[in-house]
Image (cartoon, rainbow, N blue to C red):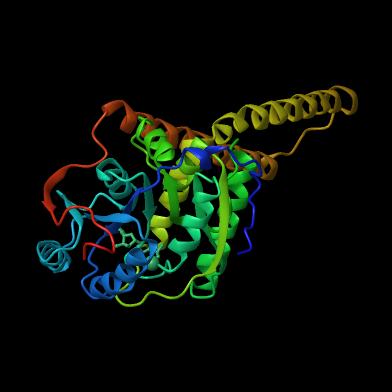
Length: 337
Ligand code: UDP
Ligand code: MG
C-alpha cells in the first residue's frame, strides 16, 4: 500500500511498543440518525471483524429525539460489543467526541461519523499506518464534490486563514475521521478547555501523523446537522481557540491610523497657517467618523468574542453531562461472535 506522508515526516519507533492484541474502540457520535444507524452497523461490523482485533463500539447519543437510542440499545442487548453513552441534551459533536474518548477503553480509537460519509473499509488501512508507527492516521478528503460549492469554498477559506493565523498546522480537508493511539487519547483528555474544537486539538497535541486520502461520499441517509450559522460559530471557536492574532492586530491597525492621523493633522494646520484658507470638511469628517466608528466597533466586537469565550472557560462547566450508560456485550473480536 502506498503510504502518503503528511508534513510530519518523522515516524516514532513506537511500532516496537505496539500491544500484540490491541483493543479497538470505534467512537461514534450520533444525533438523530435513526435512518442510517442500522446501515452503519451493517457496514462497520464486517470491517471490524476483519481486523482480527478485539473491538468495542462507543456510541454517544448527543440528545437524539428520534429512535436512534432505541435501535442502538437493542443492538447492544443483542450482543453488540461496547456501550452507548446518553448525554442529557444535545451538546454538539465536539462535546460528544470528548465524552466518547473519555469512555473509550481501547489501545486505539477510531472516530467515525454515523452517516457512512467516512468509509469504514479505510479502518484497515488506518491500522496499517498505526502498525507502521504512526500514532495518528487521519482521513484526508480529496474529493468533496458531495459537499456544496459554498461549503467547500468557505471551508477552504477557513483552513487557509486558520493555518496563517494559528501557530499549529491543521491539515486542510481532514475531518474528525481518524485513528488515534492511546497516547493521543490520553493527551487529548488532559486538555482542560471547554472549547473543544477537535480538529485544532488533534493538531495541537501533535504526534507522528499520516494522511490517508479518500473520496468522501454523500450521506447514506438522513440529513446533515450543520447549517451555515453553526459553521460560522464553529470557525470562530476554532480561530479564537488557537490564535490571539485577531485581538492583537488592532494594536498595529491603531498605530498605523494614528501615524496617518498625525501626518494629516500637521498638513491641515500648515495649510491653515500658510495659505490661510478655510478647510471645508463635512464630507471628509463624515467619512472619517463613520470609518473609524466602524473600525472601533469591529475591534470591540473581536475583543467581545474572546471575552465571551473567556467567560465560558471561567465558568468551568463540564463539557457534557452524562445521563445514562447502556452496556452491551464485552469487547470481543471476530472469533467470539
Ligand atoms: N452529530 C452529533 N451532534 C450534533 C451534530 C452531529 O453527534 O450536534 C454527529 C452526527 O450524528 C454524525 C456526525 O456528528 O454522526 C456528523 O454529522 P453530519 O453528518 O451532520 O455532519 P457533516 O457530515 O455535514 O460534517
Ligand atoms: Mg455527514
